[in-house]
Amino acid sequence: MATTSLADLTIDRFHPIVGDAFYHGETGGGNSEWWMKGGRGSTKSSAIGLIIATLIMRYPYANAVVVRRFKDTLRGSVYNQMLWAIQQLGAQRLFHATVSPMEITYLPTGQKIAFRGLDDPLKAKGVKFTVGYCAIQWFEELDQMDSWQDVASALRSFKRGGSTFWTFYSYNPPRTMWSWVNERAEEMRRKPGCVVDASSYLDVVESGHADWLGAPFIEDAEYEREANPEGYRWEFLGEVTGTGGNVFGNVVARKVTDEEIATFDNPRNGVDWGWWPDPWRFVRCEFQAAQRRLIVFDELSANKQTPAETAQLVRARFTWPDARGRERFHNQPIWCDSAEQTSIATYRHEGLNARPARKGNMRRASYLWLAGLREIVIDPDRCPLAYDEFRRYEHGRDRSGRWTDDFPDGNDHSIDAVRYAVMEDVLRGR
Image (cartoon, rainbow, N blue to C red):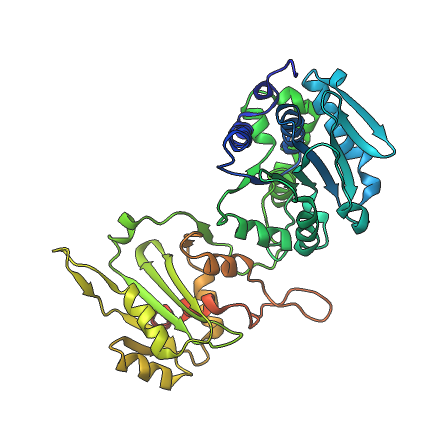
């Protein structure tokens, strides 16, 4: 067995993940999937290698497959990374490594760590083990994969014949939220049993292990922070900085509690009509004019539902206990896309205070008004659709690919609902 503590070889940031992995192995519960994103020097790949090597030695049924996009990058990266991890654990005498085939065998049991490239799908899907099953999967440099479909297809082949699995993904986030990796990571935040973790070299320094990086690395990072702040945030902190064309640089993601919502006294509600494929979208906001802050704290979305049906969804959102604890319908104004007068009439028939938003020639003005707020606070858990839209929305481009000051139409249903909700404020502010 290993002669060195795993905790001593990983930074504090990753200790909860180490605990997760072994709790899952002992109980079959807890978390089983980890998206580990970060900037250069975060040691995330080192931590994953150490965890995998330890899992192999601890659970005699566990084999692992380590995947990169291109097979010719395996030896110089993840293969050497696993050999380093085994050595750091003091377990090199317990493993035997070969290059052809590229695998590492745990000698006491015959368990293996196999290495595959997704540029050879047949070989990637053809991993066979004589002892146990493929319990562990690691996708390194996930952002280099062509699509989530490729990864999911490989997972379906790997995750067979067992009941306990560990899956790790490691990558440096691409700059733009439009990347499939960044989009998928946001979705995974809401998946049970899945952790999305972000780390950087600063976590290594704060853990007291700056020597793992070396003085030249830290000096280079500090230079970039001064000389190229946005590049520093992307390369060294692992932040999704955008491509330079983002419209809403004022979006703040944070939890909005029930207690905070109970104090709101300046509500704004909006509806963007839709059927299929465009969705119907409803949002609730709080406008804090003195702070120039808009808080988006509730949303609903539906396809192929009539206005009478969505009206009942909205009524439920406006029903909560009054000061005496009695359920009461709070008939707040709802500002709706004025293009659907019949739908607005239906809402009124259903007892809702629906009003047409005066949107004529106001598209550009309303976008500029929202972009000019000090903050647009969005709770990603309560309002994942609005959060995704606002973070990803970019200016248009001309034929040569240069940014313009246009606001393209499309994939902006939550944004439109928010625009309608605050349109009266936009008109007053104009």
